[in-house]
View 1: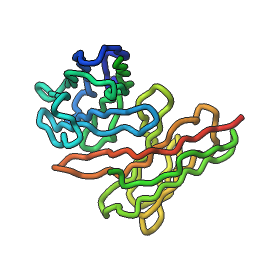
View 2 (view 1 turned 180 degrees about the horizontal axis):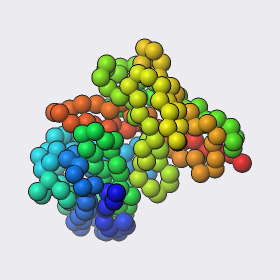
View 3 (view 1 turned 180 degrees about the vertical axis):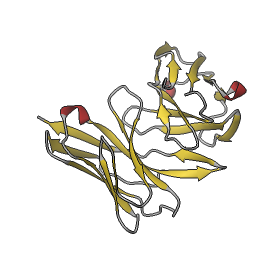
Length: 112
Length: 112
């Protein structure tokens, strides 16, 4: 089966600019996760969707980060405006009720 | 916060068994233990999971203590390609969905 697709793979932006990441989960997976992984640390859960509803966004910096999952399938994560400390790998994952979570390759963001 | 604690790093000789410990003393009765690994520049990859019985698959074995407060991931014959960061995760249930909270993981280096 096709895996979790993310794009772009790499992005370099200047601070105060905006950026968006896209995720296409595995077909049929109701749960979608966005993680932020700073170099040398484990992935940190930013937001979790069940279909197109938010289950948990307690760790999402809502003053600058937003995410949506239209029609319960694809999802986008946006940062506006970006800060230097947002430099990280952004991972998307999806899972079904009876499956483990599958992760995409991630988007590496560098803010300069 | 993650419910697991792991050693920061471990070395293992190629061809030998790698035994990676994990403590999860606050695990609840219906929470599963999951193991993922992350090779540099890739998304986390699922290895194995278990509830209270020992489990084995083509990649590894998982030994969970009877009181479920700790577990050990065993890679029976480590190869250089097993060099990665290994994450032990207690899968939590929230609002009818599952949540995967990562800790800092164990950086395993397999030595030639």
